[in-house]
Length: 500
Image (cartoon, rainbow, N blue to C red):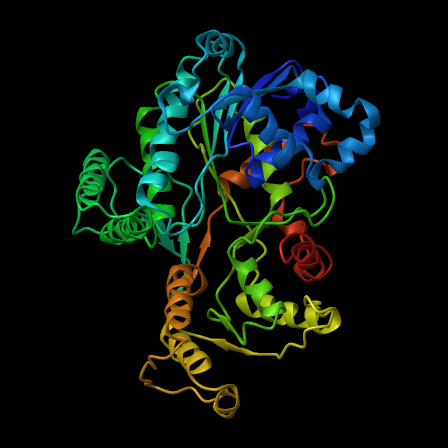
């Protein structure tokens, strides 16, 4: 039980944390937060994929500390910023896909084993259709390599693994006649989403190696091998019931962690679709386009005359700073113990739902009020567009949109045909590409489900026993006004950072 007056920041005093995946979006938010709220942190080991320490340090400077995210801390410390970073941060060159995280220097490795209190693994390849070998190396094997490293850390208090809430799994129950609720439960080793297939992770790894050998024996060039391995990843994922390579390999990584964790205090955080920071360190910071953002950005540029997704589908999104606040809370409250309930869904769908129709409406309002300026300096005029309620309707619409001349397309713009012959013209490759992307997003924009967050709600209650100064560790999704957040924070953030 927390003693009166103690803050979560107090827990971080004198601690040494290893952060993996440091150049990624969420890890940067975590690192910035720790350095800003607890200057008495002992040390941050930041693992970066690089061949040596100098290159790792260079990547950290260019890709992490020089980003806008650190402007609040930079302004706060002024001329002392660089010396503060140098004092608190140690760049570690490594590779998640290799045993011992690819750390070659045994002296450094042994010092880390002595000093590390906490490990936060935020690494992951998030491309839905990445090469199967790359996704397997990072998302599946990498998770096990982190666990094995944690077992060698003598002061290990907690291992936090950031996973994803984006997969469809068997841990569901009925919420209503049309909706299911995904439970905060771990995957069992070998669990397949299709009863007709048996998932054996070792066999999957062996089949992948065999596939690689076959492709190389055919003397294929690297580009062909890349596409073959992308297709193979989707094929294996679909065989076992997962919609794409990303969620399949992340699920297998979770299985290995849970099965082999032994006495390591393990926390698995499953965030929903992560969006820009809502408040901290400032509103609207984001990197890249994350899931629904691609639709918003393309729509704002006038290149998307429709929204893919059933209007009533709930888009489970959550701002990045709320995710990181939940990570810190879980880290503090579960330190030194192996909690019974260690899966946390950091999501909004159950307590503060946002629908596809809401995002469509708000996006239209924003870009009508503040049009996106094209490269010629002229504002882009957008139309309201239509919402397409099924993938088949979307495919027909896209075929018409790209296959017919614009004048003809405008005449049939609001007519939904029931069949259409693909036109093999110069736009056929574009049609196939758009349809392929739509297929990858289908599980998320037509899914009638919400995510249970009972464990996370209990975590919020437990966190209230700490003095959370200025609500800087708040992670309650009911505090978000979606219209205000989307109009005044998230979409402006996308325009500034992701629509360049």
